[in-house]
Image 1 (cartoon, helix red, strand yellow):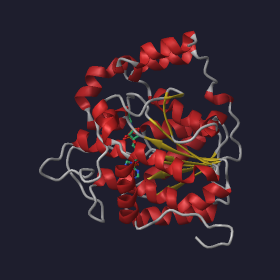
Image 2 (tube, rainbow, N blue to C red):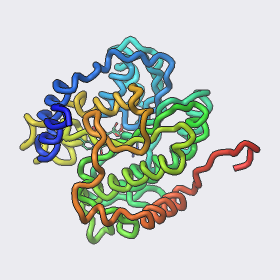
Image 3 (cartoon, helix red, strand yellow):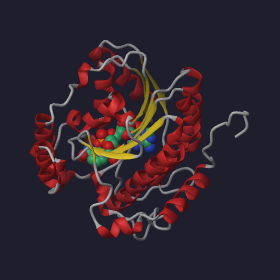
Length: 332
Ligand SMILES: NC(=O)c1ccc[n+]([C@@H]2O[C@H](COP(=O)([O-])OP(=O)(O)OC[C@H]3O[C@@H](n4cnc5c(N)ncnc54)[C@H](OP(=O)(O)O)[C@@H]3O)[C@@H](O)[C@H]2O)c1
């Protein structure tokens, strides 16, 4: 182990150092990270959901500064337009457009995919970052619980619809912003959607985030051979409008220790930019390093191949889409 590995292991063990700005600061200094602004991403096409606020907005701004061609996704077209105008103004990069879509509305996700395919001959990076923790139970238009619809099924559908274009653009990347909250959750298919009777926002969110991480590995196992690199990550704990709204007490208590949005978004932007993302597949990251997907025995034993197969089958069925690629003869 080199000294950096030793210090990283010490920082990683207690969640409070690892997830806060302390962990970020120590790792960045010790490991001499390449500054994000040194990457040249001219001509790289990146679609990023949840780009109007918090981490997504910070990552998009960082990527815009590197010259990327960006498609920003949020639910409200007017809000999206304002963010695009402000980002062009702040970065001088005018290759930024927006498409409005609610990731929990599969009709809108299909329309989003059609627009991306029509507008961009290549797609280098697809980033699933949109997400929220909601204290009251809501349902998506198809009746699926809204956290699961917008953070599990919708992103799955979008990746599936863009799979062919991502493969044609290989090496390409699909990045999913999960959460350290998923460390507390078992992988469950029958309990993925909490009922109105037992609903707890933080628990529902953790279950959806666990499913995202399992699916990331499944995508890599099933489609990694095409040159698409699938990665999931968590940002630590960052001060964003989302955290402020969903966890106000946590936000107040942890205030000075929370990462800035730029710090929370760093690994997301880095995975979109750096060649390191092309050297592996199906990995879970924090602070530019691969991390374990389990910290508890109970969650590890829940995460079986059989349960993953059932999750894949359930998401496929709910999305109404079976991911596949045309073979050499043109059939699927
Ligand atoms: N901040 C943290 O400490 C933290 C920790 C762990 C994980 N995360 C994850 O990081 C991601 C970003 O969180 P954040 O803290 O930056 O939150 P945020 O400030 O609330 O931003 C959330 C973004 O997601 C978009 N969004 C939400 N629901 C959507 C939907 N159904 N369809 C399309 N877009 C949707 C919002 O856009 P509009 O409202 O404009 O549609 C907004 O741009 C989330 O996946 C979150 O779970 C954050």
